[in-house]
Image 1: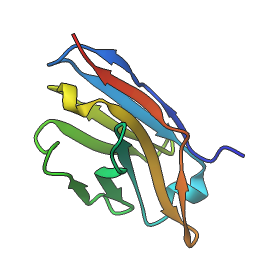
Image 2: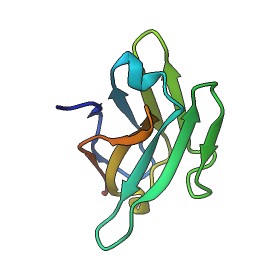
Image 3: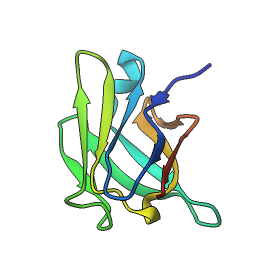
Image 4: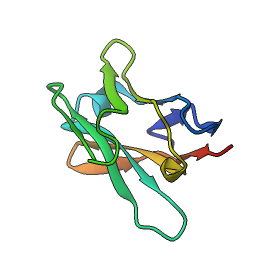
Length: 115
């Protein structure tokens, strides 16, 4: 059963923008926090950005000033607006939620930054 549904990945040139979306159920969306992680080939999964139920955000140093995480309470959806993309941002991006005493993960969406 898919709990987190991601969309918005793709191929973009350096300097370009993409917006990722992650939709879920009300009960999961109302949990402690949601966020985005990414994993590049050969690397460990790393935090990109998180947003708490109260709207407090946290970003990896490597994306500060370029990425923005937000949540739409009416749609039970979070977004990751990614601007000024760099080749090193290339990875599979995973949506994450902490709710009902456990972590939930999406299936991942590929982001490729290349000319």
